[in-house]
Image (tube, rainbow, N blue to C red; front, side, top):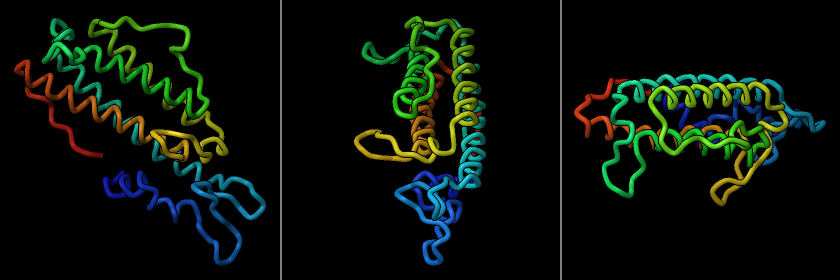
Length: 198
């Protein structure tokens, strides 16, 4: 997916054609961020297009995240640059817990961590395992979520957004922490592998 298309979709602009805004002829109308036909049915092709884009985004996210994590030597997973900061391990533990918790609470997706707690500090192999589990869970959720739910609204950060956009917000949160972890690599004398955009 091209970066400009992603940004437009993230802001809600690029989906107007995808969602089929044909208000002039009355065949399809949008209510908020939903794509519905005049009978009130969900536009299935819109949901399918969104699923495809979300799957591409999350597959790329996993590849970039694992490239970052795999570079850090196991002996420095407890590294943090100040006493107040999270360790490298905690950064990724936080991403796993936050992503699954937000999707559960706001989109009604099952939380695989609801009845279990991850250790605050995890060794490298466990961090990689939990990240792979999280990414797998997100992809399964994208596929299994009903069209109606994917296009419905939820509350996030004081705003009402469509559930499909919540998935992008969660990926944006991971990008934030992945950027921090690039600095953790640098502070340990590791030159991060180059990876570019989308």
